[in-house]
Length: 202
Image (cartoon, rainbow, N blue to C red):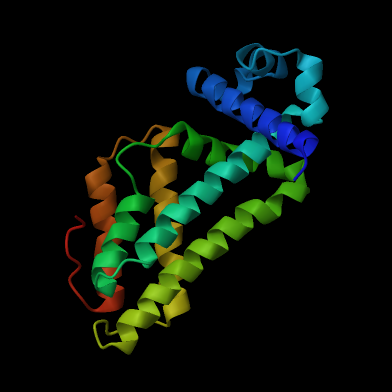
């Protein structure tokens, strides 16, 4: 990579970091190019040189956040623990104690997809990859005899991801159900579907 291309990537990264600093300090609807530019110590025109619109900047930032979330879950899959312990850890990661600004923006950005369908693959891809991770763990556990499945692996995996998404949306609409209770609900389904008692994540 030449110096010009590297500098361009660095500037885009600076703008994305500035976007998240602004996003954490104000509601989504009040995030604008001028605020991001001020945070990045550059002009609004300079921001729009790297990102054509605020929506493009937001979706690029969100895509990065989604990739980090996926990588966190991939590391759980790669552990040497039992399949049950890894499923428990996946649930804990998927229904966290605190809904971060990054996760909040991921869900809120769904509203943009109707006007900008080109961003749908990123959202759909995250969902499908999460399902694949769960399915891999479920098939491992079933193959070793650790799990006794009540449904096909793909069905269980998709239901687990759907439950996580639902419980992560709850706080965004004002539901204050304790997060541990939300996790316990997902674990309850997982235990029924996998035919095993899951350990508490370390």
